Image 1 (cartoon, rainbow, N blue to C red):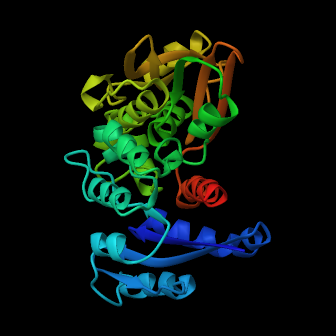
Image 2: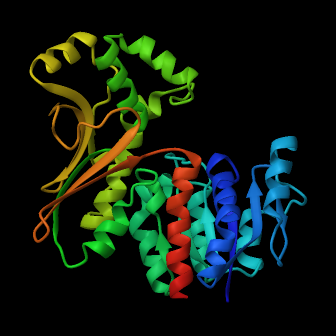
Length: 332
């Protein structure tokens, strides 16, 4: 039995999803010869540490009852440097101003000899090359499937299943909030403001929806794809971004009459990065509805490969994180 010790930096929806996923898959993983133990967890108010393995049921209950995991105040960086573990999982919130605290957590982890798994887009959209080099220089794994499209395995597909192919272009729908809004507007002929309010009430859109509806979130994901798959060294500022706030029911009706839908499409083709509303034929692979995400990958050998699935949700995102953890565990 291979014991793999993990620390969890951040214990919001995704962090709790990771804990629940590890709990539910614990026996299954032991049958695969992997004993996952979470030995450190932090949130914004404190931390919990147990080198023999934290009681995840207890910590989930404590978070629900008190709003924190804290049984102590050891900082994330102290845990990364001083508590023995193999994998640091960063699920702290995305910050596009300076990438912190995720950026510091990841660089410290590589410096301390820890492998890194993350769902945090900010550091990768800002300093991808630096993080990749830090991992390589220290002979460590850097896995980030959960940063783009939730449960949809874009990077595993390209780097592993399609290894040997040259990817010539990628287009996709990478923001579930925008896709939900555009789908509802088209189906119900409702104005943008009303559908946005509905999405907020359902928890699909944030109270401040700008990050999603102005195309920022989709652009960050496109940058990570471009850097990981094409090695471009791009940042958010290299993306031509237009959001969905000016789409009208009339425009959607006109599209429908032409047997098309309007979708917020991300494109990485010929070195250009673009996020913008685009007409898509109703039978096209990108014409998915609701909160679904989709990626269509053009390759030289395999042709076009299209995958679709849930692009958000704590358990769906945690499934990608668990996949990355298991990949590292098997290669240790």
